[in-house]
Image (tube, rainbow, N blue to C red):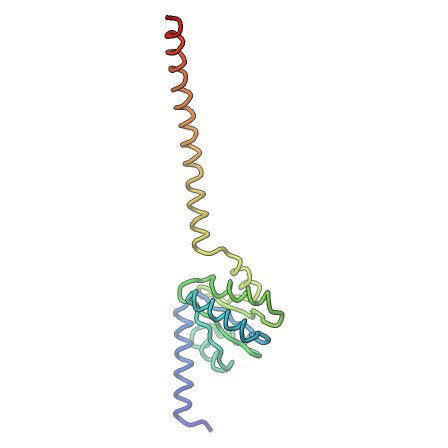
Length: 178
């Protein structure tokens, strides 16, 4: 039977993970079996740079944290060598980075996830990963807003140029006759 100290440590670990899950906008559970150390190091670095927490923990502890956070259905996916990546700010970052590695490594697999309180299956997580980044979406929006304005400005400039050329041509003709 585990000691009281060990139980308290495990309860604290579960509480910390549950708090991270509750305070995140999205998370992804993966089976990380078969990833090499150098690939794992690169993946963890990319996740860190994106502000994503990546945690490898016993499935029972992760399951308890999911229970506490309100994602009890995610426990069905906690089999084998699993890890969870959670992001407090960017809903797409964990899915995008982990999908990249799932495509490179045959045994590395996306199992499930959540986004804005909704549980996602593996296909939905992959669809989420295909969404362009916030910066790209903002650039497309601004480009869409600018395009009609520029077209209007070019049309106005063409009208001004035509109206400006006509008087100049008429003024030049009488001057040539004189």
